[in-house]
Image (cartoon, rainbow, N blue to C red; front, top):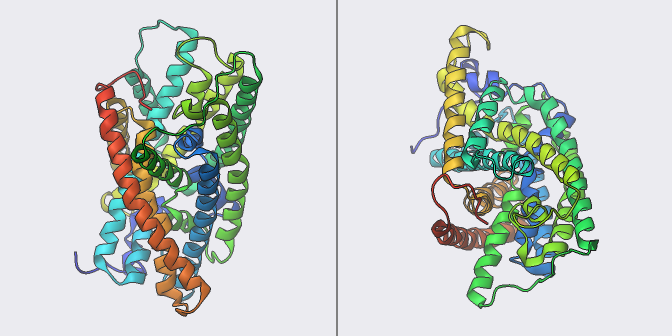
Length: 451
């Protein structure tokens, strides 16, 4: 593993690269990148923001949310600049692992990025299937409270649908799905915020308590777990792969896509975090819809409105699962497909169906077995997103453009890397600690998602 894999800029290598030709085909416009970025970041995981705030409180919660937003926008912009610089030099990179290996000149970095991306993609795919199954369970319970179906059965239904959708051949082919995903995120955000306001103003509004945990150690651990969750919500980890879907030259296109994405973020993130935490305080669930539809007592907003929100969330989860599966599919097809035969030839179609179906079944099985949606977010954020989104982009920029050590840019990048290395280490410890503590609260294939 000491030497980097074959250079992707090598034309002979590219001609035989089925992962690039089929999965990462480059045909998109800037607004397609905006759709992909928005789906990758603005998902139902934003419904976890009130839960994250309960470990931070109002002031620190606002601060962390804002800092994460500014740093990730800056980080993704720097990543795009590095990719554009390499393309201008005749080395167009379409994979994060290739970019890191080339710029840092280290073969082991190639495999490190594969490992982290796989952890992120699999974690989010598991989380998406789990939350989609929970959405189906919520709808089912509202119609048939004592019905015989269990959470794992709804997860199995979601998995079957995902197996079908996984056959969409390329990242670019998801552009219309991800455009719909953008509007779905705005729609259920409006519904959730309206429902929270309605619940807060009603006579049956829950008592508000914004106090943090009693011991200082618990406060610190909960705080870093919450920071990890926010990092996961802002996280992307696939910016180079999204930029790869753009038709070259890509100069300036990703910046427009990022502006589109962060315009949606500014509307959705703050409104959900503020309204949900305001109403439920430190009793907020890891899925704020569950707080609005408690197991005991009536729903805190009109049932039809909440049901519509659940449907929108469910639909968008399929898009998110598809987006974060693309790197796994690209890796599989690089090895299994024959670029000299058509994308839909029997030679390539059969392995695609088999391998993608196995991957989705694997994710569905673990979603049913380990119902830990909030905790999975924290671990994925600390272990996966913080290295890829808060550390590596700054390092790649400094290595590529070599800003003067006396320049503000250089020191901003260094400070971000140092701070988030510490945050990542502490967040990993606190998130894994919470995962271990919660392990005593559930049984395999449980019907309850642990908060």
